[in-house]
Image 1 (cartoon, one colour):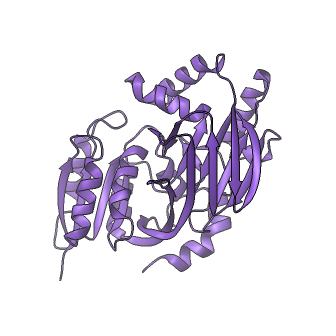
Image 2 (cartoon, rainbow, N blue to C red):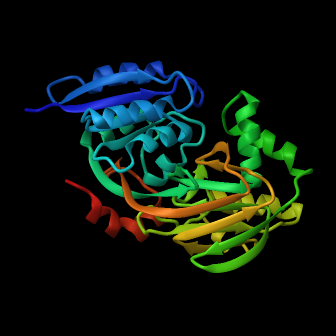
Length: 315
């Protein structure tokens, strides 16, 4: 029997560390005649992209990203348009795409998903000369992504601390949009471009976003009074932010953005792409390992996209 080749790419500084547990779990769970795996540790920014692209060229079946959304982002960029599938072993701070896909946060369960190797093709999104897979954004969340990257200490508590610190001095941004040829002018507290549903840590910005529908959800969060902040936060963490009068969602395939600043985030990673951005869907361009129905997924995700998920899975 031909062994399935797996490359496990580990970002040793992602999330809160403890990646030695991945090494031990892989030794325990991937031994035997079915798998042939290797471990690789990233050494610099974009190293994971180089490693995953090389693996795809070498005919590796699955590349597993060990870390958070930043690691996932880099690994996925090297696999777009190839037959090699990406698996995610979530070890980061937010794990937004993994949570959206219903991938278990417990390491051994995530490795079981990897071993089962059910795959589907998902949309990815081009943004200028770059790409993202879950959520990109400008405005407040982009600012916090920059501050978070500079902060040093990872985790949800750090993210909340930075957000509260920046809140009082933040001013909304003026944005000119063109979505599938129609123009809009928006003043936004934040603006997210959602391929998947959430930022991470189950903070959902677009409950109805789908990674298989060929559309981007442009989520415009209007400025809101400070006393509304707890309610908005509650809605994000209870999958009901789309019911807020402060959020407007416009769907489209081809989006042009002009903003007064040049910073944004791609899957939580801070980048500068200039004042103008061109965002467009690249349908079904990435193979990704997904869990079977036996794992608990977000209920709204199952109800709305189960049919598409099941039809896309390669048994």
